[in-house]
Every structure is written in C-alpha cells, then in structure tokens.
Image (tube, rainbow, N blue to C red; front, side):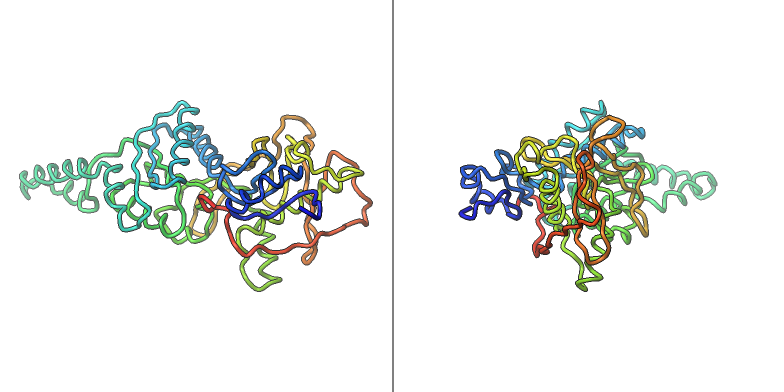
Length: 369
C-alpha cells in the first residue's frame, strides 16, 4: 500500500483478506480476492470464485422446469453443508416444489451408510420385500405366476419407490463417489430419481462412475476454460490448478478497466458494472456486496463427457445489444485480455498483453478458505 496501488489482486485465503481489509479500505483501494468465505466480502472486497449457492439454485430451477417436483438432499455436517441446505430449501420453495427429505452425514466416508439408508426408506422397503417374498414362496412351486414374480425379485432387495424424484448431492471428489455408491446400493433408482450436484461435480473422474451418469449439475460454460487449460498444459507440461482461470480473469478484468477510459478507473462502480464481463470462465459480474454472479450452464454427466443440456446465458440484461465485456482469445503463447464492447477499442495493432503468474494453490471450490 505504500506504493499506492490502484487495485489489489490475489489474497487467496480469508485470513489474508481479513489482514489487509482495513488497511485497503483506509487507502481507498479495492481488492479482488479468491476466497470462498463470503463473510469477508463487501466494503471494497470482491471475491472471484465459484459460488455453490447459485449452482444449486440454477440446477433446481432447471430440474423443476423439467417436471421434477419432490426434492431430497444428502447434506454434509459442515459449514459448507449448512449453507448448501439454506440455498437448497430456498430454491425448492422459489420453484413452488416440495422438500420431501433431508439427511445429514458426517465428513467421514465410513459413516455414510445410515444417512443413505434413512433417506432411501430402506428398512420399510426391505420389510415390504421380505413380506412379498414370504407370500410368494407360500404359494408353492406349482404357482407359475408366483415363481415368475420371485425370479423378478431376485435382482432387487426392496419393493416400492422413495418419496422423492430428485436428490441433491452437494459433494465432490472421493466423498461423492462413495456417497453415490451407497445411494445406488440402497436402491435409489436413477431411472426414477434424478441425481443433482454442484460445480464440485465438474471433474472428469465422474465419467467412470456409472451411478452418476445422467446426473445434472450447473457450472460455467467449459469452452474457453478447457482451451486455456489445454494450452497451459501444452506450454508448462503439467495440469493447471483450477484457480488459474480465476486469476487470469481477475487480471484481465483489471486490464479491461485500464483500456476503457483515458484514466484507469478501478472504482467499485466500474467493478460492479451490471452488464458484466465475459472471460475464460464466461459471463460474470460482481454485486455491490462483493459476491460474484455467473452465467451458468446445466450439464449432464456421461460416460465420456459432460453434455450441455441447458446453455449458459450470454447476457445479464435483456436488450438487443447488451454492453458485455467480450474476451479476445489470442494465439497460443500470448496472454488473454478483456476489451469493452461498449467503448471505442484501441488500434488494431495494439495487443498490450499483460503478464501472467500462475497460482500454486487452489481455493476456488474450497468451502471456507
């Protein structure tokens, strides 16, 4: 701050943002950080991250429009889970749908059985199954119909459906795959129940998890980010941390603000431009409370790819020619930057690429960093 910066980019964790927040406010300098801890946002602190809240709202909205009406959720007993449940409840209410069941599970993969059994009503459905088996066996081997029914029941362990037609699993990584395995084991039928997730599902590991195939989740459009990440790996010989796209967009936003006016304007008014920006992670804008909003697509999980089943919006505003900041994607080896569609552009031969410094830690999706 002694060097009088116009904008600060890069505090990664909430404790780092908290440490500089008061000093930045006193100096009149806005901050773009990468923490997912929303409590540090506002008063000049803007958080560039992926918000689970809008991902849940988006996928519930889409599922509701497609006929799903009774919702359940398996929620981790964490601060992240508490936030997820609040948003989930509100999203279901906003769509005038029913919240059928919620079960909580501890952040321990060895303790998932009972929560899944409970939400699946497994004991009740198992009792119906055993009673039906006993009844059919008493009819004897001479009853062809009974024997046919018994043969059909050999492939299942329960009878009857659960009381919901969609279930949210706001989880990722190994915990998600373990949870999904138990969901399948306790016969929550994915042909009858749509499994929903968050941006934590944006992981190619799910391609080899058949119990999640057909599931839906919301995330930014992948087109530009995949191009960027592929280019990064080609250049540096290793996979990029997920956070690098956010860092790139933050720097690109700053470059855009420099290019828009004769004198750079990094004020909150400019940063919270309601028309938004479009970067590597596609459409986004900052709210006045410092939180980010994104234009999200809805994806379906497949065996080889994620398929867009509902595209991301191209604009936050309903107008014929929205004033969206569009990204110029240069050739491999050059830096990306944003340019304002609503302002005169610089001369065609003026690329002015800005330097990029890859971030080594990833806090983009971490619950409380």
